[in-house]
Image 1 (cartoon, rainbow, N blue to C red):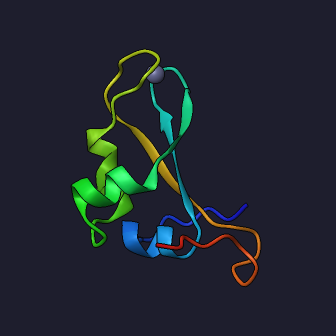
Image 2 (image 1 turned 45 degrees about the horizontal axis):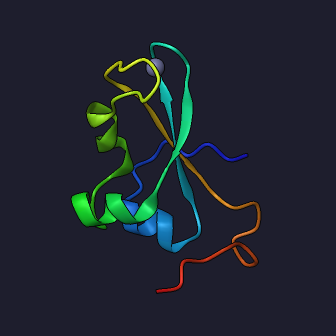
Length: 83
Ligand SMILES: [Zn+2]
């Protein structure tokens, strides 16, 4: 798994088949964030790391967490969003 911490936008991530994992700093709960609501709310140009300050854990209610872009193993054969 590739962990990229450089700044990636939501649009770039999702159009390349990536997903967004978030992890709660308080309880360690991890969850995959859905693409469409994020794109609609924050826009394709929003850096994924900017979402960290807006996270609220669905398990413990804690604010803040870590967002990680997760890419498909092989970009050439990976899933792509078709709209
Ligand atoms: Zn939590």
